[in-house]
Image (cartoon, rainbow, N blue to C red; front, side, top):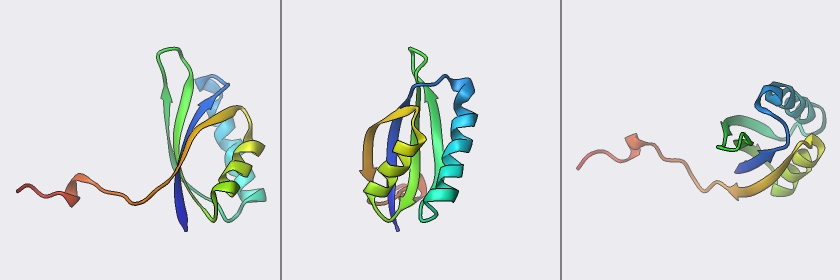
Length: 94
């Protein structure tokens, strides 16, 4: 399954993010069972705007965008197909 990195900017405050997370999960389970929400990093910028960087597995970018549209409360700033993953362990010292 193709994996995607989604950068989002939310229209809600940090204290409402658990509610948004529950809504996102419910939408995946009820409407998009093909999507796998792996994890998200939640950040708050200097202006207090909540941003997330989410990793999803999905059959298509369009399906990820459909889920986002149903979720609401945000805009997608960027959506990338993930080519691969690396960690420091992949690069042993010379």
